[in-house]
Every structure is written in C-alpha cells, then in structure tokens.
Amino acid sequence: MADTMQFDLVSPERSLASTQATAVQIPGAEGDFTAMPLHAPVITTLRPGILSVTSASGTDEYFVSGGFAEVTAENASVLAERAYAKADLTAEIMEELVKDANMQRDASHTDIAAKYADDMAAAARELGF
Image (cartoon, rainbow, N blue to C red; front, side, top):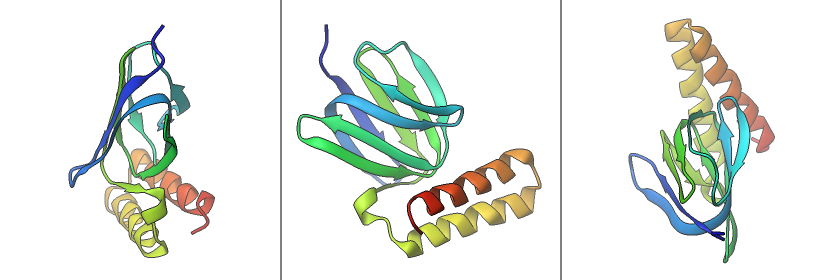
C-alpha cells in the first residue's frame, strides 16, 4: 500500500506547493473531504477555504479562493483561482477577496455568484478577518 501521494498546488501566478503528502484536506464545493493515497478518482470544484496538506515535514495550510481539484490514487492536484499560504494571508487581502466576490454577485445576480460571495465571507469570518 502506498504511504504518500504527489500533491501539487498551483495558481495562475505561481506554484505554491509540490510535495509527497500523506493527506490533503480539500474545501470542495459539495463539502470538505480528505484525499489520501489510493483515494478513488474525483474531480471537484473548490469553495473558498483552507486547504491543509500533511507530509513528512508537518502540516501546511493554504487559503484557496476557488478552482478545481483532481484526485487519483497517486496524485492530488489543485488548480486554484487564487491561493495564499495561510501565514501570508492578511486582512487587506481578505477584504479585497470579499469585495471582489460581492462585486461579482452584484454584477451577475446569479445564485452561483451569491453562493460564492457567501462562502468567501464565511471563510473570512472563519479565519478571523
């Protein structure tokens, strides 16, 4: 049985992580889940939230604003719209993300945009911003 899986986290700006992971907690749009080696294949959209990666060096946390995750038995790849190491996240960054989500909601008047704005605001509150 495999003990680790390859994990990669990328955003349009840069690659944030590439490591062998034992577990990846993913904020899926349909609910949070943990990907582990030999996980059943799945592709899902992400909601704004904390993505947590456990590896031999410990646990690293990242904030993702949305995007996609693809999980296979050997890999977990996350393509994030925007992503930040949790330690680098500031009140100013979160304010801008919430503001952008609210502007999208107000401009489109769709249920999807409203849900995204609500999820972004909830993530900001959960993080204490």
